[in-house]
Image (cartoon, rainbow, N blue to C red; front, side, top):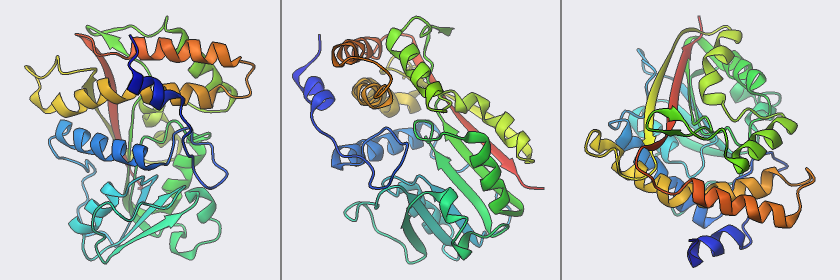
Length: 295
């Protein structure tokens, strides 16, 4: 049964990004707190190996695209104190989260638009580009990856971390019959988005001319059932079971706007979302980290 807290969070007014953007997730205090918890859970899941790209030389310029609360940006700036580190997002990064190292700068806007007018992001200007979970807001993955490849210096790396929006139960694909998810995938296709970008990223990087591409897959349980085998999944599993039903209720509402769904049907799909994304033994997502180098 749906709890009062879930119902309130699903239905109450939320705020969204300040620029004309495709992103379907909110930008309010509640979402920034969720992002911080999610980042901590992902870090534990990956044994605190936030960056997978093998940066051999101290980088001069790094970019965190879609930086959200700025957690990864600050980490990069602290890890590479002599580098210029830019965090770019559609909304201002909150000022009450974390300490900004002196070599970090946060910018508001669409990175692909910035490439056209900001000399700091000229072709060949950047050593490392990081992005995570842009799936819900990216309408042109091949173009985005090409643009990021053009930003890189020869030898520079790009790293993209994404969830494909599919779920598995005891190792078998289980979400093909979930009505809300099929509606979400259909709405995404109508709006030019790829909700399986995580598993398609290798192809996008190959098309962009990147080399030395590698992919690492992580398992993200819905709940804590995997902890006995993989204790590092405890926090992200708790987060997924607690937050993703509510999160995708918001996404369903936003993604299906203007596609002919009635308010009543959207609410019905939201109830299905909460049910299907509840914690369950054996239920999981997959999280993909894909890296590529500019030759």
